[in-house]
Length: 222
Image 1 (tube, rainbow, N blue to C red):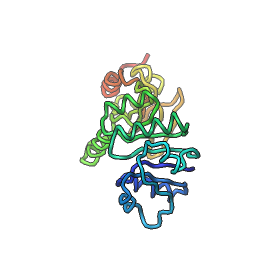
Image 2 (cartoon, rainbow, N blue to C red):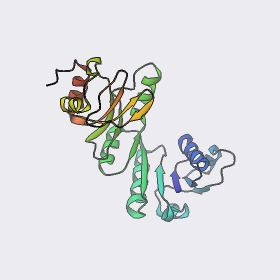
Image 3 (cartoon, one colour):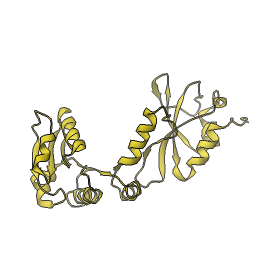
Image 4 (cartoon, rainbow, N blue to C red):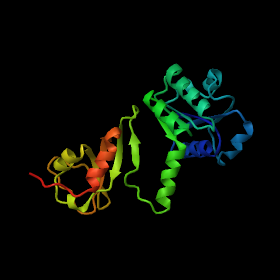
């Protein structure tokens, strides 16, 4: 896969190095030529000096034949402009942009541009490292911002109930269950077991209700 990376800060340099280590062909763009010093020794990809949303600069980086484009500079506006140029002008199949402003990130997700919202992601990682639970953190949101996948904290009384009953009561759909360290795709007749980690897909507008029902005592099944 050929990947073009815009921005050779710490994130961009690390990303370029890891992509190359994975066997991909990489080109990286930065307006400051000294930024390329951050690249790991042995980096053999292409380095291009220039503004990352300039079409001529992108062409020099090989955007016309790229399979993916990542805009990870320190500027939200630059990242979004570059991502849109890559998607709309050069028809790059996979495009992602780094965004600091979480509200902006949601808007661009709805436009079909996947984003990494740095502040919320970093906050979640710190909470986890400080002893917080990963449960109830939205792990993935689809581009329209309406549906997400979240790990739920569930009350012990749900153990022994069927997946179908759990879904009916919570208004969610179980995407997968982590059971004893192994992922499981449950069927309609599957039953929740002790210590299951349950990941569900749900409408984000309904997520508070889903969490409340799942963390409360399970109702009696008919």
